[in-house]
Image (cartoon, rainbow, N blue to C red; front, side):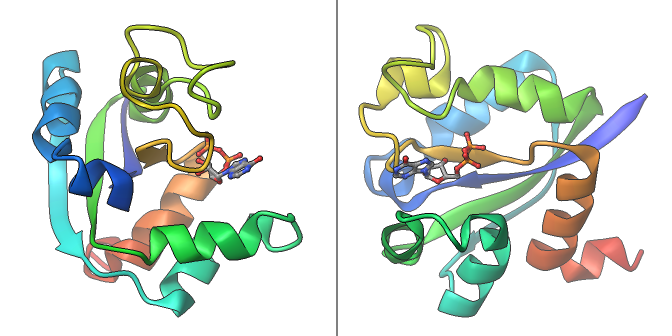
Length: 139
Ligand code: IDP
């Protein structure tokens, strides 16, 4: 069963030169890149994307981070794409949770600056794809 997930290559990964590294890992896993865009993120888009974290103490800092430079947004497709990309990314905290071999486990140190985002469920994927690629969800 083919699934779609929304992934972000966050500003820290873009500025550190990891666009190719992340896309390469996605492709080597066997997933397909169905849409891809380098994008500056408005405050409005960032707040909608992270709406579930609005009450968290780190919300302001998270918005500042995600709008601090361009991100690469992509729709990634394949069998169990949502779980498959979460596996590639590793846990949220790159040191305590992400294991070596994952994007975060290999390349990141900070929980906020953890390089990538991937939708965490089918519902989030549908919502996030509609938010980042409205032209796709109407198709
Ligand atoms: P996820 O990206 O692994 O799904 P979430 O819990 O949904 O993790 O958190 C969204 C993003 O918010 C994380 O990727 C990270 O950038 C940031 N974040 C999460 N928890 C913290 C924290 O405790 N301090 C700072 N930033 C955090």
